[in-house]
Amino acid sequence: MKPISIILLSLIAILLALVWYQHGTAPEQQYDFTIITPRRTSGLQFDAIANLPRNIVQTNRGDTLEVFSMDVVFSAASQDMASYTTFRFASEDGGSLSLLQSEMESAYLLLSEKDGKPYLRLILPDDEFPQRWIKYITSITAEK
Image (tube, rainbow, N blue to C red; front, side):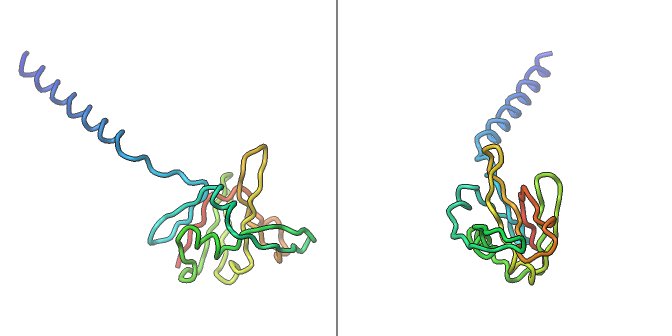
């Protein structure tokens, strides 16, 4: 009976050490917005995005909006978008939209707020189909 107790106590001690080690390591950073490329993933908080330089664009509907260019957003996340051909935008509600590199020049992100909670919206000001303006963008996946 005694050898079994020693083995069980040893296993419990090992388990506790593993839990302590895992709990002691730094938790993975949670971002409000993520850019995913084959090389790496990086992200930004809404506060950091709000401090980026803005562009003023006029939409086909006549709205004037203060938006963030994709170049600025990718640069702030230490990512380079020039070597990628397709960009998939994913939203919190499960929607997604893919854009080609040529479309990214006229694509912008708008920082909006609903019920006191900030969110990003994809804006294509020259697009004839404003229903492609996806709300609640959480990530962009860049692919070659």
